[in-house]
Length: 147
Image 1 (cartoon, rainbow, N blue to C red):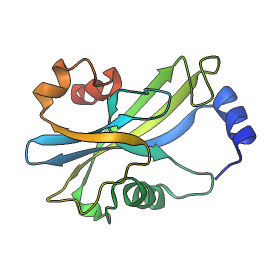
Image 2 (cartoon, rainbow, N blue to C red):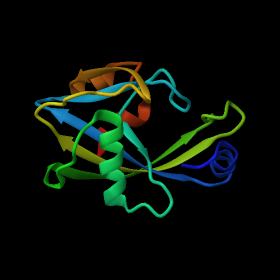
Image 3 (cartoon, one colour):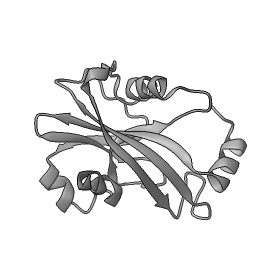
């Protein structure tokens, strides 16, 4: 983890690399309502940034464990592609923009033991059709269906 001042400098001057998980159970996807900027108060996929010197495979495991208490089984991951997200704000306020490069994966699950509320205030399961029409689902989540 970076201290706040160093992380703010990075957000201000460089793109962040992150992993998003489109978690699917039957025909519904798990989304969480974001607590922090960017995308605050929108429903978004589960995910997080990759740390410096962290292997992508290790980041996948860490993010799923921290966000939803899930132990990753690699055979269940389907790579959906690389996406870019541009926000006019950041966790540091409205005067610093955020640029993410996202590696997006779909993950089929049967059940989840415990969903932690660290980055999201609540969670919902929605079908693709519901995701597309809802105004409280972020536009970048909707773009994942365009692959």
